[in-house]
Image (cartoon, rainbow, N blue to C red; front, side, top):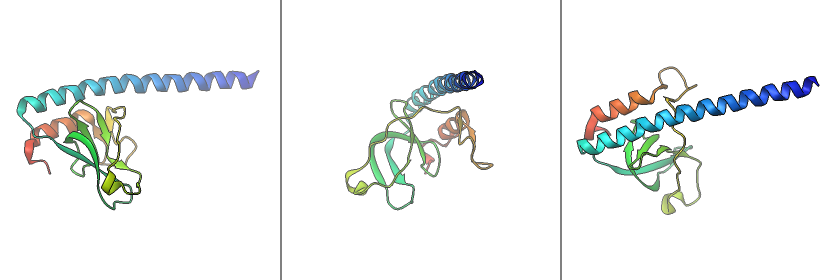
Length: 137
């Protein structure tokens, strides 16, 4: 009986965490859509988003067009408002064939759990990107 109780509590906490993450992603998606709208209004140039393998060797075409949010080009937003992590598993022939990246659920806090200075609110990344304009490397 105690095992059933523990399992129910665990399931409750898992479901609560899932709901919380879904709510945060929905709020973050609204921020991304506002960013795309503002970037278009300002005439911010788009570019093809390129992914890098974890090992750092090479670059892979993704077929996605949008804006990088971080200067190291590890995160991008496509022109439809999709949030992309652009560091991927190494792929054989990826340099020539390209890779498929699918939008992931955007977080409100980018880099959560990372080392100090590597985590910041998504809104801050979006604001800094808009302020940088086309001078963003």
